Structure formats: structure tokens, C-alpha cells
Length: 148
Image (cartoon, rainbow, N blue to C red; front, side):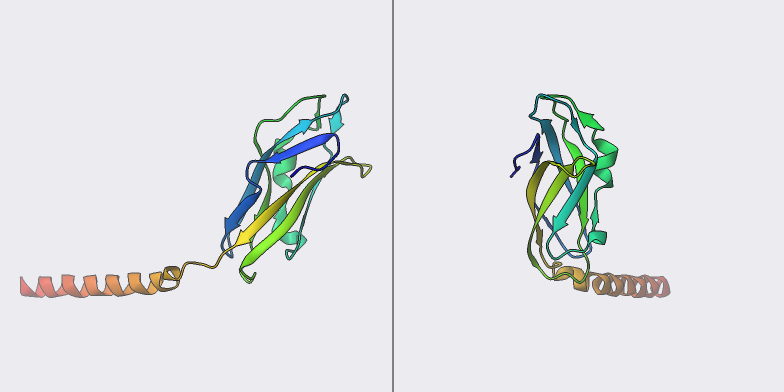
């Protein structure tokens, strides 16, 4: 949900789901709802339960224009990423993405949610299963060679 300001931020999906160790990329559009140009100087993310090092707003600075003309809209652009730490607990984490002017005036913001789910159980056993398969295959190949 976007908040009041001169900038409307619409996320393509305000809820993304991932497992510990994965990276989520939030994408959206920016619309200047004012009658004057809106500078897009700063972007930040506040995500409860995550440290600032888990968040990367570089995508915003790479993809967003320096300013947005009156009533102009960006296309869908990648805005920021959230790296889910490997030790984070499963659950729902609420956050806010904010775009501000250099003087600190909030141009606009949008709420989002990160849903962390556990790794599928089979992934725990997959490496061992592959190893057993390869060993069995190797033994079968050697047995066939001896028989010939």
C-alpha cells in the first residue's frame, strides 16, 4: 500500500516468499502524482527482523530516473532486494520501502511483506541420495565389466 506524498509506489507483488539463504527482488512502478518534478534522491527499506546488510537498494539507483516529471510513471523496474539470512526463523516479516528527497522529505512509500518458509525436507537428503546413486552405479558398471 502506498502512503501520501508526491510519489505513488506500486509494487508488482507486495508479498514475496523465500527460504533461508535466498534472495528476493521487489519490482514496481513509481508515479509522480504532483504538478512539479519529483526528485528521487534516496531510497531506503525498513524491514523488522532483518539487518541493514540484508537489504540492497542499489537496484533503485540503477533503474529509477534521477527525477520524475509531473504525472509521469516509470515502467516496472527492480527496486530493491532482500537477502534472507540462513539463520532467520520461518515467519512473516513486514517492511516499508521509502523514496525521499535529499533534504529528507518523504516522496512516497509502500508496505511489503517477506514470508520465510523452511527448506523442503528432501533438500536435506538430496546430496546423500545422489552419492548413494553414483556409488551404486559405479559398482554396477564394474560388475558388468568383470562379467564380460
